[in-house]
Length: 253
Image (cartoon, rainbow, N blue to C red; front, side, top):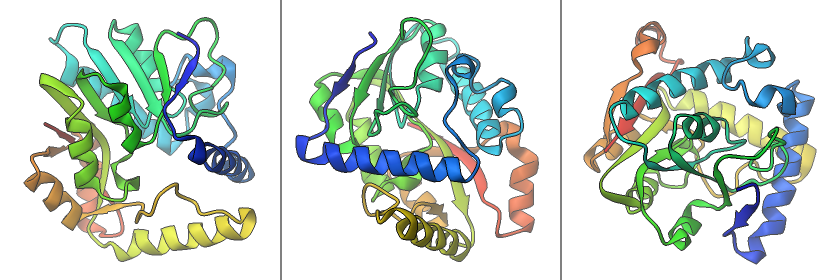
């Protein structure tokens, strides 16, 4: 299962590859190089990411997803926004049949140099390409990606259509901002800096790049049941005191 299936349109592949290469270089300049092959199997744990805030949040994601799947039989799982496959690796190790999907397929993403045989299916796909899979899943995971879609509600609907009857959609990493001006300013600054350095737009599709309370209301009205991360109570309490901090939530259907 080591080959990467490609569902992305031919006309999009070069643009995606150019952006992926630029993003990898940009992250390396910021002191965030690609994960080494030796460190991949331990993710989201391991000494290489021990002090990294992003990976600390992903450790909570793994605990959350495992708790939600506890008691369910081994399932066919779609991990969308899979990146380098860290969550797919863990869920496959738990006995699930996993498909990892992501627009990026290079060495820092789906094509990461995992040691040995990759034990999950890998598919290069943007959100709109997923129907080409022509199959349904018992569990679909939106892996910290809804905030980067053009329309989070439409993204949820697209992913929900991929579920088997009785299946579960899990949306991880819903970072809800009470004061949207703060993340908006940060995203604008990052976009401008990235464009000045690379000549490219930072995102594959038009997006604000964050979620706020209005997005949360729309998602819940569309049937996504959200709740705070159990392990991030203190961080969420701080978000009520300091409006610049996001609230950490997840969603299920």
